[in-house]
Amino acid sequence: MGLDAIDLYQIHWPAWKGNPESASPGSIEEAVGELAKLKAEGKIRNIGVSNFNARQMARAAIVAPITSLQPPYSLLATEVEHSTLPFAMEHHIGAIVYSPMASGLLSGAMTRQRIAALPEDDWRKRSTNFREPALTRNLYLVEALRAVGQRYNTTPGAVAIAWALRNPAVTGAIVGIRRAQQVDGVIGAAEIELDSNDLLEIYQSMALQAA
Image (cartoon, rainbow, N blue to C red; front, side):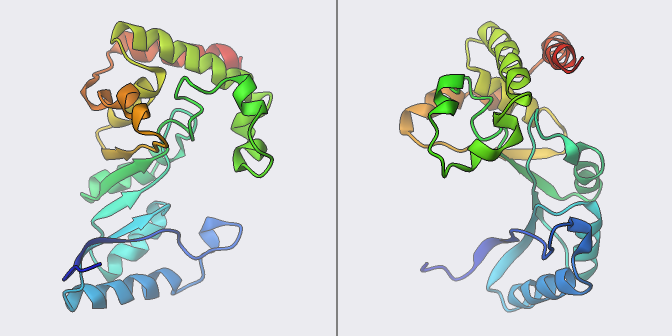
């Protein structure tokens, strides 16, 4: 790459099969240990992890300081709020969340027709979020995001990103863009400050559909 050092090197997944808690003893420690050697040699500047939970980060941090965490986080994937993001915040680990629009489902551009027309080898065809009964609930949530977005002259996707960024543990968000023109719909997400009424409207739509 023509670099003297890589600024941030992240472990994408902990080594596990089936259950994230079953990561074999030593696997996390060994991986982070190797990165610590590279850091000591000046080849990388910071060590990060992706898709680690709080316990796995704690194991990693015993070996070497962890700079960043990259977890999935969206209105449809809030599991990391319980312990993972609080751990990151408490230990000053930056959280760069990914898929805040839930793989495009919360973008506002995803319709039933578009989902039905997805290629058979598209993993979203098999995702519970893209299939009934969850799909109806999720599309109802998109309409709530659209209503909130109209007040800010923006898209449902930008509101979904703004919701993720509002969490004080979140440092930034990775937003998937396939075409340059899609940037226009979400570029202002970081500037949106959702108020209590916005959040209430979003949560009420989720509660009504869950009832």
